[in-house]
Length: 140
Image (cartoon, rainbow, N blue to C red; front, top):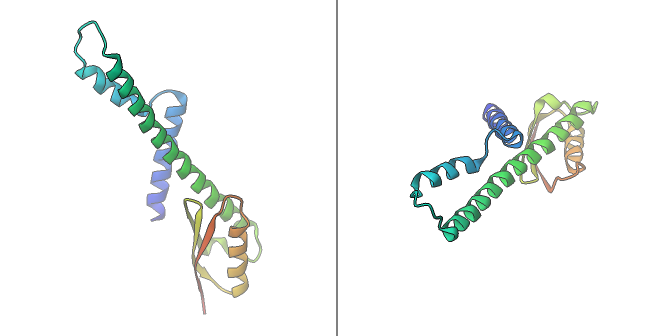
């Protein structure tokens, strides 16, 4: 699961980077498709063009929003993982942090209830976290 997450994160970063640098945009494919089906009559149907552009703006907005949401979730996970790595009580290597829509899920094993409580506190105190799901297992 971690590998899949890393691959998706890399693809999203590459797509966002190429979009921001102007090498690619989701509209390029739709615009090329539109040009290929429009007859070369010398006049343009402005209503159809306007409708296609509005649809393109909507689709592009959804893609950008998904990338932004994904990036903010990844940033939250990174912040929490960093806090855990800097904490002396929490063994950050044994705890996995995943975030979806501001909801953070902690999974893994902890050695003491104090370590569990500290990990949960670090996650809850991170700005942007809506809720923390505790799936930590106390190792006997």
